[in-house]
Every structure is written in C-alpha cells, then in structure tokens.
View 1: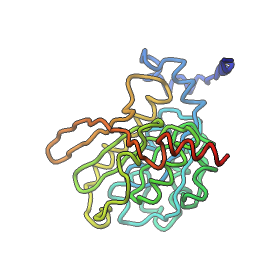
View 2: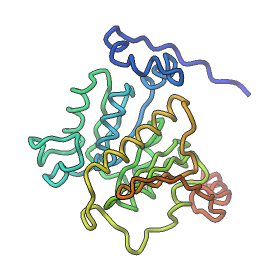
View 3: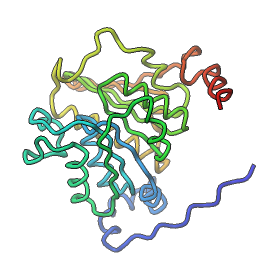
Length: 264
C-alpha cells in the first residue's frame, strides 16, 4: 500500500509564534500539532449555543479554515448564550456576523460563511470539503443529514447538544455513528426555545466540543470516539458512556455500506 506524501511544513510568522505560545509548549501539540491545526479545515454546523463558543475557541487555537453554515439571523434571545455576537449584530445573518468577529479575534484564520440550511440534499457536497465537522444544531433532521454525510465522506463528526442544565458531547469516526445513538427523532424532542437553557452551559459544551476537535486534528490524547460525555450542570458532575454500534443502523452498518457501494 502506498503512503501519502508528508504534508509540507507550515511557516509561522513571529506574531503567530507569540499568539500560539501556550499551545506550542505543550508536548502533545508542539510545532507539528500547531501546523496540523493551521492546515485543518473545520465545518461548524449551526452557529448557536454550541457552535458559537466552539467557533471562538477553534479560531483562537489557530484552525486554518473555519466553515460556518447557518440559515438563521441573530436574535436578542440568542445573546444570553451565543457569545460570538453583540447587540449590534441583531437581525444580521449569523454566519456573516460570526465571520467578522472571528476575523477580529484571529486574522490568520480563513472563514467561509454559508447562509444556508444543511439538508440531506446538500450535506455531502459541503462536508466532503472539510476535515472535521462540529455539529451543534438542535434539529434532528439536520443532525441525521450531517451524520450520514460524514459517514459517507469519511469525515469525523463531533456532536454537541444541550438543554435546561444538561449537555452532551460525542465523537463519531465511522462506526458507531450518531444514528446508532439516536435511531430516530425522539417523540418529545426538546429545543432550547421550548425548555430553556442556562447560558453558561453553552460555553461548557461548546468548549468541550472544540477541545475534542483539537484533539482529533492534533492526535493529542484520546478523543471521545464512540463515547458520549454527559454533563449535569446542576449537580456539577459528568460521566462518559460507551455508544454501542447498531447492527441494523441504516447509515453505518455493513448492509448500509454495501448498498452505498452498489449504488456507486
């Protein structure tokens, strides 16, 4: 089997070396990890409670290209937890306002905004252009479309969700996939608009999702692959549960892979 040629080294300016100094001294990241971050392309699906703080941390960490996809506009009710925005951004497209703030935070990051809704029709064509996808949406149709596209394109998925005082983050790198965890839309699916959410919880879950993304890119530590971290903000506790692969999963099972192979 032939090996891919090594990636060419990435050069950093003196300003970048100073900017990333606290990461460069980490043995798990160092120069090679920082170069991997600069080469990386990460797509953030949904610039909401999870995606907004995650975007800030990924831009600050030096991810080279951030894709932002969201069809929504900034509302006053978003500002309690979506800290990438300001009051002056009200009624602006989220991805356009977000792109401006990320550029101000780190001008070395390229931001690609998509004012659109990700669906089963367009998800694959967008996702296959990126190395990692971070999904923070609260719509199950979108989550399922993102998961299917990630499995089909072989792109790792970091999924975050929250509501009330609780949140969760999982990483999916093929099998099991997100739909093994959630086979279908729950009958009583909750959204933040319906049940509420404490703003600081979004920061916790968004930061963990960003951390998992950084680990995937740099190879640092052990990602939550096939595992789900569950965080209880009221109790101040967390636990990690293993996600079992569903042998009949319509997305990642052997039968599903065979159907996709035959279709191509």
